[in-house]
Amino acid sequence: MSGAPPAAARRDFSWAPAVPALSLIVILIVLPYISILGASFTKAGPGGHSVLTVSNYTDALSDSFFYETLARTLGIGLTVSVACLLIGYPVALHLARLRSRWGGLLYGLVLSPLLVGLVVRTFAWAVILSDNGVANGILQSLGLTEDPLPLMNNTLGVVIGLTHIFLPFMVISLLNVLQSIDPRVEAAARSLGASAFRTFLRVTLPLSLPGIITGSILVFLLGISSYLTPLVLGGGIVKTIPILVVQSLLTTFQWNVGAALSLILACAGMLAVLIFLLATSRWRKIDG
Amino acid sequence: MDKFWRRGWRGIHSLYTALVYIYLIAPLLIILAMSLNSGELLSFPPEGLSVRWYVEAFHNTQFRSAFLTSILVAAVATLCSALLGFGAAVAFMRLATRRQNGFRLAMLSPLLLPEILTSIAILIAINAVGWQPSYVSLQAGHILITMPYVFMNVVASLQRADPSLPLAASGLGASEWKVLLRVTIPSAKPGLISGCLFAFVISFDLFNLSLLLRGIGGITLPLALSDYMNWNLDPAAAAVSGTSVCLSILAVIIIDRFVGLRSLRF
Image (cartoon, rainbow over all chains, first blue to last red; front, side):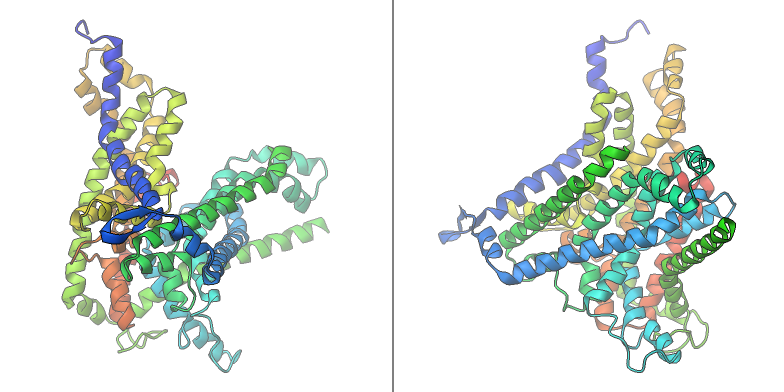
């Protein structure tokens, strides 16, 4: 390698393979986010010129319907992430401790909903939860209810669907952490006389806290930004911010309003995550 | 006594876990069962088994053209994100560790930011420069969303490989191209395969981004399906869904055979 270029030139060249990917990120992430921020602070003035304004924000923030929708959106996100945690934790624990040849299959089972499209899963839940759907059919044939239960076209239906759709994300987040816990730590607690339940409460649970936090934040953010599932399973009655935003973009063409609404949701979501992180920081310091 | 409680607790835990697995898989199985229904209506359990609704769905010109659009968009997205993601992964491995975090964050940003917010932002940006959404914006959006999957999986593969191999090869006189061809690409292969399969499936199923960034006529299968579902809930919609479910199961099996599901990165 006598003709090797000097070190500085080589270092420049080593960046080259990343240039196309990073250009795509700049064009489709950086520039659009700048432009949505710009759009949220402008509106069409006289003569078709855009003028700077904060009215897109102040209009929304002085509207009680908007607050109601924002609260509902955040509430759905919170409910779904708690539900995913309660449902997903035992499963992640089971998968992490499984030492059998079924492990791969069961892991595939957890992943499979992730690989089936959003539309298909939402459609499946619409078929199950509707008034003459599968769930009501089973309940009625068992004689548990006479009239069909309202499982859809309300917040309950949205939560049931979203929990199913985002459960794999929670299980994977938990599994990543649970698998990294040294089994000898639990064995040590047991041999020192702690009961199985106490071992779980004082050793396993605190050690898995990072997974709980990651998974909850992930599911919360996915929940508040979902559009199709609340639209279909909410039957147009349950309005969320993403539904309002898409309406304002594709139906009423109020671009600037849509931009402001989506940025308010993003800020509210980040604020909620921040509060959650601050609230859990005390535990994280003790156990981490 | 402790043993008794432990056994009972284990039993409850297993039962609960089994119920969750059923919850996870039941909607997909119900859709598959309904799609094989020989009757006129969506019913469960099915009245009789047949593939007539698959034939029906295939003869529906809207579904057929949407299916072809989806295959085209997903194939181009997979190919492009394979090239871009692989290039980025190679550059990532050459970076100093302290710079890797920022680079990774940038590369994963399409996944970390909500897909719908990114799509809205892109749509507003397109509007701001006075263009209209078209096939180009749809395709570019799909590449953006799928690229991180290839990047993550290739990086994971390269990190598992012996870092001294490329050095050894170039020390023995191999040119940069030869190192790339004979060392880097073979070590990246498992991640490249699973990343590409994942990219294809993700692109094939993408809904929000396609809804916002499609041009006139650029209807992908998920869009056609949700359109159809607004007007009719019949077994043809279940058949289209069933096809999608089967494709996904196929992808899971292939990934498991080639590289093992647990090596997959999200």
